Length: 118
Image 1 (cartoon, rainbow, N blue to C red):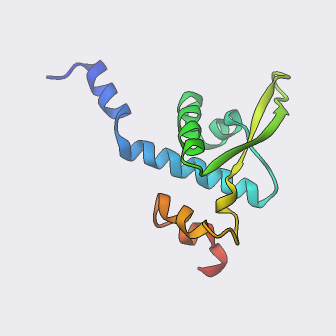
Image 2 (image 1 turned 120 degrees about the vertical axis):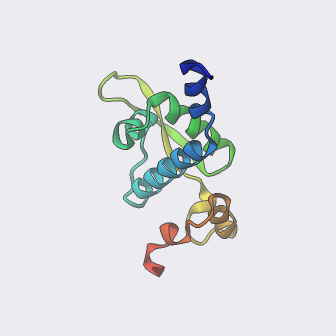
């Protein structure tokens, strides 16, 4: 029988859970981008309910995948420290020649990317 620690590790390794976190973060960043806002990792964590350590890991993965980009820094109002501003990568933005490819990377998000088509 697996230990509690071992069971917890198996849950962390669950790729479906990681994929759901990626999607949730990507949707959140995309929604804010539509409104002209660029969230920090802490804001994503606070508003999505995903632990900050998980948000940091998923954002780093999404940046490496080319789906999210760091666009600069802003001041965290709580700490006064500089934090990264995040946005959807240029290839997600309407009209970019690779936009359909970006949509297919996560799969099934065409309705999400283009709610006006639904």
